[in-house]
Image (cartoon, rainbow, N blue to C red; front, side, top):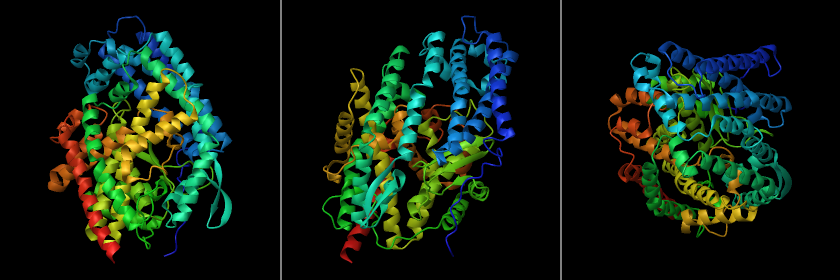
Length: 598
């Protein structure tokens, strides 16, 4: 069957276009909703020195208005983001995104006022008279913690105003420069200029010389933007650190733990377990090196294919396979995936100006949109499964209010990892040895990135925050910290003469939310732990799992984990999940030895 063209997502079902009357009316509605909400806040004295003693009726009305406003803002901003991320050169989309900044600033201000107000109310009395309050109990409890870390109302308002020309502007700069950067490279003897995302895609090419040339071209290209990116990173980390200190946080990491609904003890237990497991990952890297005929892997070998005849997957084949395998878990998951593919919720086509990476965003009601750059490899099949998992999570959350749906990153990866595991297990159980070797390698590549590489990024960010208290850092220093972090985690698994000093530019997470990295590890290991529970007793798991996904914004991670008998505050659970990865390493080593012998 001939390869079908890769899909672009259909946004016309939301609004006809960015310059349509319908979209302009939607933007105007954002302004109207915000104005009305501001009036309600003022009338109730929200975020002022007035006593916070609302009646049930006024509380219910305010929460209802807040949720309605948040829902509509999500639709409008998501619609704009769909154009900006797929074409960073779309001037109209960029202009519309900029026009939304004042509205988003107003919403952030209201959010801080609401936190202060909820932190001061007599919640126990309110629970007795308001079902809405009871339904939003966790939101109120979070606010009581957050309220202790707010500056004065005028200072918080100023901080919100300055975000537009501060961290928000730096995020935009990073996205624009990295998506528009094209680098000169010689690939198979042909000199050409290639967009950075496409150069990075060559990391999985079968030809080692191609991979090395692409790696060198990528490093050289990133070096040309190191000074503006260093300015951006210094500014972001400086802003976050200073605001955190003024708000009374002992460190940006403590603030991040609270934002992810996990305790520092949980984070420490997970990171200690990961550190102890690094030798297992190095075994995988050494086995892969032997299979590739090398003594030691270099950075540009990390994503090299391990078999010469790896199966290619058309987008259509991948879609059919995912729907089929998801159906073996549940019809609800399969129906969701089929709908997302059928209704063109996926933008899979790589193209100039489109950003690198993949993500899923909730758009409206139970609809999501999935962004990726599809290649005909199992890695992309896995990515599609991952993002569909996020979409399924959004489906489970759809009946919750926006305030209840506020899922921290640590729990947001649960469904995506679970879906990846479903399809990996299907291949491992039914594939040939060559297919199993390929799939194991792809899976272990991902696990290595999420456990080993993410630990390097975590250590990098901790060190940067520590040094940034004293002064700005030069590009050279960012590179040195990154290399030291990679050496401390990859160890002898990689040739330390060929690491990646510019990962601090590649990973856009550094320019937004602080410590955006470790939640991916939490999601991987938590998802693997849940899959092990499902594997032992599938039938009762399914309904409980959907309930878990629908509740990720309504309790802290430890409470939700306890529903499955999981204690995430000690090392035993994390070690158990890591042992599942070790079993994959053992099977990979076994298959690798056979492949080398033959």
